[in-house]
Image (cartoon, rainbow, N blue to C red; front, side, top):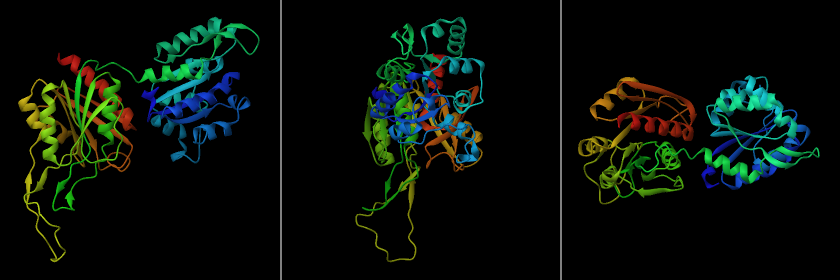
Length: 400
């Protein structure tokens, strides 16, 4: 279940005796490195105390549709945006019927409608309830809408019956959840990504840099690896942990990043330039620390080489994706950069917004390509990354 590391998972618990198994599921998911937030229906609280799940998840348990402690009292929207995936385990016959009907009159059902994250359900009920035509029709309907069905298993049941309807064991559910993040959309390809800021030295202790955290680039690297590609990540200075199955190359300056990219890109199918590379660097590097002796100093800067331009000029067969961080006229500047640098795709984000971008774990972007555009609304950077990987895979197919 290592694919679950750093994932943000919502666990919905409904009214079933199998709710006790959800305790072990929370423990396993957290052990795998996921952050877990629990949503309980009123019926679920009759089987297991919310306090139990609060202790196991280390997060408050959510129960109320309208939460006055949440931003704008819209807790369901916040949670829906937060989740990388939603698993309902156990999913009772009643909860599955509510999903099939598109109900939104409790917190869990409202989140199911409000989230763009994948949804999975692990049914748990009496064997005759599972076999009933209404339940089977409801299961077929939610599957048609894209929900994943984990189980059920067959065996002894709490009521004394034997047959299908047992919730899968927590370890099995965890394995199925991990598989949700393995799309295979870029299987067999090699993808090169740049991430983070660069530092342009002024003297031995000072440098010019920017506010990039590297989170978006690292999220893209993780999503690319999940999509089955071999990923090489060239990163500027950052304290982020390297995603699993990603080869990382550390650099500091724009020139070092340029050299590393040009060394790697010839063997790549896709190049994603997510790094915030310095446009300029000081002409002269002081050999010793500049002392505070004058009221003003003048730094003469020279332009750094344009990594994207050099890649598209020297390797036109590589599918190249650029990023544009703008404070105004987002679409105009993004399309201008798309054309001037001969890119296949460009991802633009509005850094004038305080709720997304450099200092946030969320993002919202507009993606442009020749003859098309798509807006990706506010979500966690990991969710945005997976959506971008899907778009890249589709555009690759369209251009081949």
